[in-house]
Image (cartoon, rainbow, N blue to C red; front, side, top):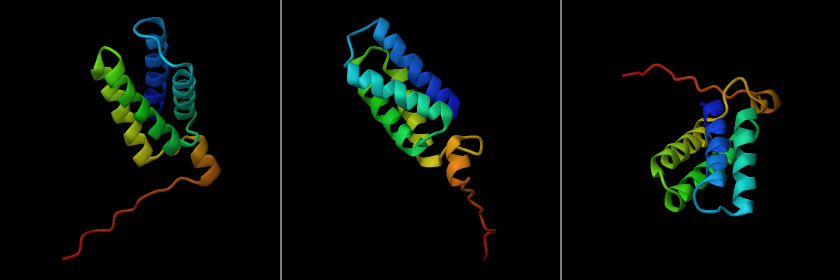
Length: 105
């Protein structure tokens, strides 16, 4: 999901650059950087939050809001869930695993 979210963010900004209303250069650089960080799995909670915020911003400023809503949802999910086992974050900080205990009555 991290790879799809990062690639979708970069692709969405590239499409927005070539068609549609002009975007702010700072937002463009921020979105591409956040997408690349998601692809690499680096600073995933921060990058996911940025992708979610950019997706919400694109929803209100560009046509085709459904793709932007999907991008925002993926970004928010990645910010909450984390990068996964195969990421730079997992190599640097260790992979956090949540073990659920069996329910007791």
